[in-house]
Image (cartoon, rainbow, N blue to C red; front, side, top):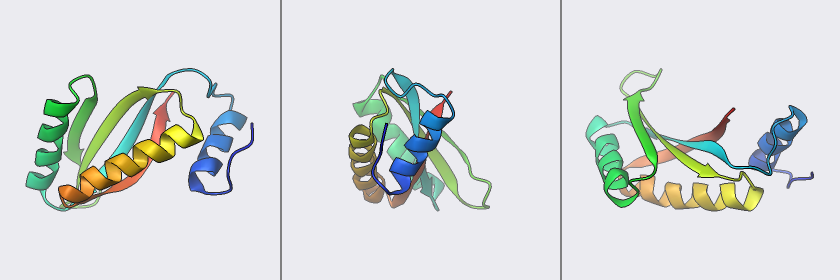
Length: 107
């Protein structure tokens, strides 16, 4: 498999090289950071209401006074799918004063 030469493509290439089968459904986790716990809780509540099948968790980040909202999506981790999902989450996180902080696969 070949992937575009950017961060997402590099991560997917590394996963493929490590033997992760990218042609099957995985739990892909998208990470979002917030400086205000209430903003993080608002995004969590929104996703709980609008995407009840998605697993969404909130926890403190390693950085003091920063909160993580992690969104677990079952999907085949294609380049286009990852990029599209990240863009959708980026717009949503911005509405709640947060921002994307990458993604990963639970393997």
